[in-house]
Amino acid sequence: MQTKHDIISRLKNALLNNALKEIKIIANSEAKISAFILLSCFIEYIAGFRYGKTSKDSYTKFVAEYLKKYIPKKLKNDLRNKIVHNYSEGGTYALAFNKPHLHLSIVHNKRVLLNLEDFLEDIENAALRYFNEMETNSKIFELAKKRYSEYGILGYLPIGSNVPFSLIGNVNAELINRQVK
Image 1 (tube, rainbow, N blue to C red):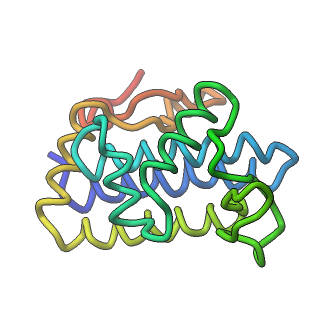
Image 2: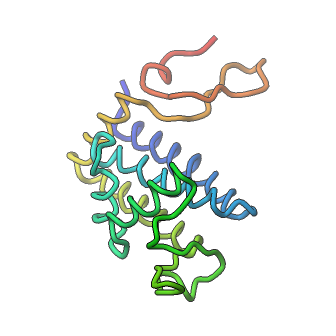
């Protein structure tokens, strides 16, 4: 049986060391729009753990609770929904990189400038705050455990010393406790 510590460690590893780390790699490449897309997805991903499921309002609830300087509905509708589904933006934001002095300022056509590096840092800080709360708040932990038990997490599974790669797939308690042969 997995302990609370085991589950939190696996979630931290999946969200921070896998997902967010890969987003940082992309953010440091020329694929800046891809980084914004993945950051929008990351908010939804972590919100699913925070509230025990991905629902119509989990994204906006997470933004309101952990990313207070952003407008939840605008971020979801005009960034997340538009950029993920239409490769566009809904009219609220101007996306930029290497412009920290302009982050969240009003620019051309009354748009709010989202500077990639600051946006990423804000999301990382929100994730760290969430994990700190999960350690001490049993209700928050139980919601994450529920989501984890139901869906697992995407991660790398070693499948044997004679196989030169890892299996990528949903990792949950059953898979982790069973040796893959």
